[in-house]
Length: 339
Ligand SMILES: C[S@@+](CC[C@H](N)C(=O)[O-])C[C@H]1O[C@@H](n2cnc3c(N)ncnc32)[C@H](O)[C@@H]1O
Image (cartoon, rainbow, N blue to C red):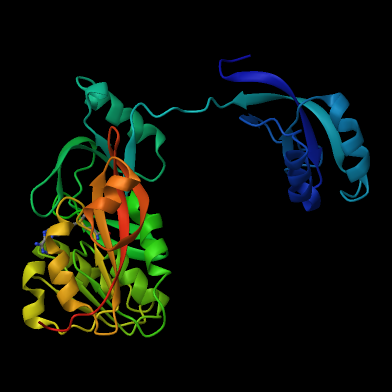
């Protein structure tokens, strides 16, 4: 038998009951996972569904049970099966659209190309692999190095049914924030006015708009590339967006010069320095009060809570570095008007 193949027992079913049989075998742990029969069994020249199973003895009862449902076609046969080994990725990576981004850690230093080629062969749907050196500068942009596949400048990333245009290496993007985008967006109540102070490509803002409860979303970012990508994404998703999004390209410190204190929810996703902008957030809070979500880097929940005055809870969102995490700290603030 060729390498990667072994002899195994298979159950062949009539085409009209293949799915029911497959589900039954799976639920009863009779299906041989990681194996695939090489040849479809076809006594009648019609290709019939064939399932590798644990053993003939176990399956005799199944055959009897399904015989009438499968209108007479259930057979136990011996066939050549292909064994598929479970693939272990050689390094941790994230996928943004059709690009895999692998952290250039000491673990893979010296064999970056080899690791990238392996990812290219095994990760479905990617066309390129880039290495990530550091996330740097005010715009929190990843410095990317091309390692394998095509050279891609702009990719399209999907999250919660929305598409985002991502100019690689020019904007901050992190698919691991996907669940957090949903957690925060789903808390927005009808009629809220939301400010996304450090919006990046708009992961919070577009989703809040698509959920349609807010009255207005203001999405701001200092990085013109992020703002331009966000505007493109607004166009791409225009049929799904419900709440208007006002996009600004400003230093968040300057926002009180152009915005009134009307916001009922303020998102501050700039973990390294969001706390420096807390005063700005309080100045923009509605006179009826607001909820502020401040992201911070901390070693533990108590430390996260201690970094933000008035905090009511801290939730761990992401791993950041060994024994350091990103927390979302929630604050219920009283409005102070436009003092
Ligand atoms: C962590 S990223 C935001 C990610 C985004 N909220 C998301 O969910 O994908 C932080 C963003 O803050 C922006 N930024 C940094 N300093 C800023 C400032 N002073 N004013 C406005 N935006 C700023 C960066 O350009 C970057 O896009």
